[in-house]
Length: 321
Image (cartoon, rainbow, N blue to C red):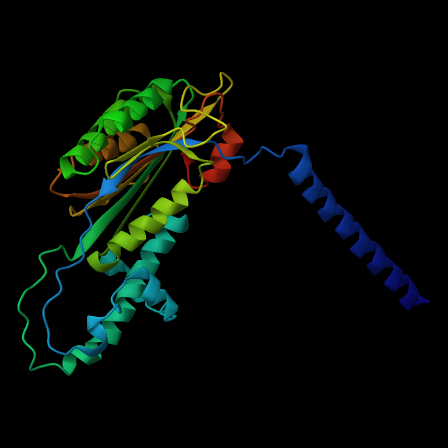
C-alpha cells in the first residue's frame, strides 16, 4: 500500500511539473509574442584586412595550403586546452565576444603547432619576403542603449550611410569620428552601455571580426540602410522603409565594432566618465591604424520600436548607467 501511495504521489508530481512547464511555454509563445521581436536596423562599415604576405618557399608541406586559417580550422582540431595562454593576448568582457576571442587565439595556437613540424623539416628553403602586417590586432565592441528621443542620431547615421566612402580607410575613419561625436554630444540620452576589448593574432583577426559582426547583425530583422565597403543599399525590406520609429519607441541600440593595429584596452564600467573616455579614444583612431569598422543600429524602420525588455534580451551584457 505504501508503494502504491508513493507511486501515485510521484505520478501527481510529474503531471504537475508537466502542467507548470506547459503553462510557461504557452504564455511565452502566445501571451506576448513580440517580447523579443527584432527590429530592422542599419549598417555602415568596411575593412582593409589583407592576407599576410606569404613568404616564398619551395616545399613546406601542409603550411603552404589552407592550414593557417585562424578560428575555423583551429577549433575543428579540438584545441580548447590552452587557457594558460590567455593573459599573453588578453581579452575583456564576456558573452559571445569573449568566447570568439578565445577561440581565435586557440585556433592560431593549434595551427602553429601543426605547421611547426613542417617548417622544421624545410631548413634548406629560403624565405624571400616577410610579412609587414602587425603581429596582433585589437578588437573593440562598444554598445550603447539610448533613449528613443535620440532620433537625431539615427538621422545622422542614415546621412553618413548615404554620403560616406566606406571603401577607403579615411572614409571609415570619418564614419567612426562622426559617430562617436554624435554620441558624445548627447550624454543625457545614455542609459545602457557595454565595452568589450580583446587582442587576437593577425592571422585570425578577420575571421573573428566577421563572426562578431554576424552575431550583431543577426539581431536585426532586416538591414534597411546599408553602406559597406562602398556598396550602398536602402530599404531592402518590403514591409518597412528607413525612417523615424514609432512614437512609443523606448530605446535605440548602437554597436560600434572596431579592428585596429593600435594596442587598445578600454575599461568596461557603467558610468558616463568611462563611456566618454572610450568614445574619445575610438574617435581618435587614425586612418592608418584603422583596419575595419562596423556601426550597427536598430531600430531603423518607420513605425518600429525597441522596448526595454527587447533591448535587454538582445543585448544581455548591457549595464544600466
